[in-house]
Image (tube, rainbow, N blue to C red):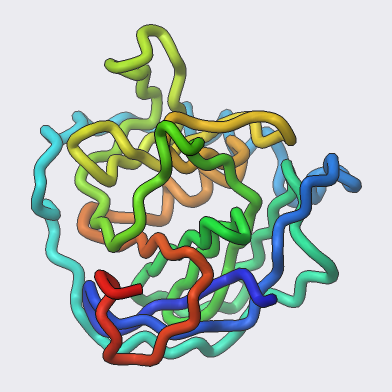
Amino acid sequence: MDGRIFLASGFVALAAIIGVLVTAAAPSRPEPASLAEAEVAAAKAAPRAPAPVPSAKPAIAAKDEPFVIKRILPIDGPIKYGEWHWDDKNVPDGPIVITVDLDARVLSVFRNGYEIGATAVLLGTGDKPTPLGVFPITQKDIDHVSNIYTGAPMPYMQRLTDDGITLHGSKVEKGYASHGCIGMPDPFAARLFSLTHLGDKVYITRGKQVDLGDSLAGS
């Protein structure tokens, strides 16, 4: 069953798109050479802006415009733990939309309707699940350290909720889990961090196909 989801028109409307399921196998291939660790170092070396105080509301309002899929990345086979893909060549500027499918354990990044990134992710467990819903990014911190789990590094942190749910860089391997956050490989997290703005929305679903106009709360 298709795993990746796109969502549309504000905080409540979404529709299904073609995707892939994450398997429980160990990574079967190295990370693409074009996505080198040097990019992670470059992102860390960039000037760091003061992180805004977390807020229940987006600091920058995202436009509620219809979201139309124009391209899906041509990925062969399921996305395995530790695997990620990025291709933004010739993709025009436009709104950023991030989707997370909890069933597939896959995060996708769309710019102007074009999928430019996809990665396997770590998610929460039954005791500390990753929540469903639509969440604007309210804070960004490139070198964040957890305030809840003392000393735990959370590079390229992007806050989704005031109670600690974030996007951040992590080791994505079989057998690992988060405390509800969405963890992704550091090089992918660095690229995503450089692309997003406060107010950009992250849609977290459980793989259910819904028609445009259906309420997310009912999914």
